[in-house]
Length: 434
Image (cartoon, rainbow, N blue to C red; front, top):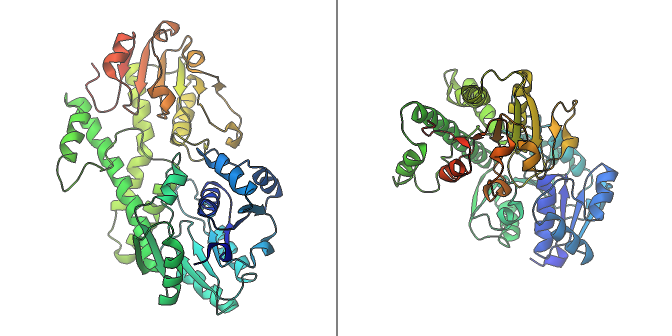
């Protein structure tokens, strides 16, 4: 495949879309990214992405300067593309039910402008069966167009590396010809491409995310039992991973639960499909409910350290959905902070990258610029997002700044003995905290 003769479009420019735009232009393909909002486009063409992601801005500027990457608010600029990736973040409501309207509208728009024989590759999350429905709409508009599904597999904070070094790519298509065309493109990234039907590829995404979600909920339940029975979740996880049927890469980290909507979205799809299939399947719904209850469990753990919560000052370290990103959308740390505020706590927050402009309501906590400010006169420090800055921080001299030197590490990412030596009463998840 001649890179300079193969043009790639990207429809939807948030985290996924910007990552895909940069990645394919890194590989030498001419890429044009589309977004309706002209303000976003103007910023992108100046090398300013709408969300923080390590190396995204630097790669974007380089590829704009070398002429491989451009951004537009005119969808007709994608009319000569051979492949267009649909990359909008599929929205979810507060109960993680997917709203696929934006993806459907994108495909309808593309069907009217794309050249014959072009392929739409959907990377937005979609419920099983959705893409095949979209293929019918696409074919009604232009019989020569095709659609494929290749679910994203990114980790915030490592997105470009994840995309360009995925280990394997899942590819769902309806015809052999479309499969071969997409394989020819994707083999520029890896030869390990798992080809299957569109419906199977959608189910792979649901299955992976739901399995990871189950592992998180499972480990949190184990950790709570460990705390009450003088066991260490660290030792238990080490023992579990030593079993080859589980393995060293198993997703067994205790904490505050999963957030962001990504895992919850797939759990809800499977919960609904399970109920429709036989009326008995309750597993996926139970996992979703258990994770939602985890934030209440975290607040209860805070109450065991400092009670009552009303009137106390809490310093919060980390508010973003996860380290390596600026987004607060569907952030579980944010939800925990809101509960603590409802309980009457005074909250001071320090996060290295949080984009507070994403908060739609009135900000009812104090934003501070560093760990020292967060700790001054605090009754407890709570680490909610495991930024490297906190892992590497010199904690000497912080405890004396506090009214009470309590430290709750909800991510188990700090050294217990070191925190004790620095004057803290240190608490963590799934360990004996006495």
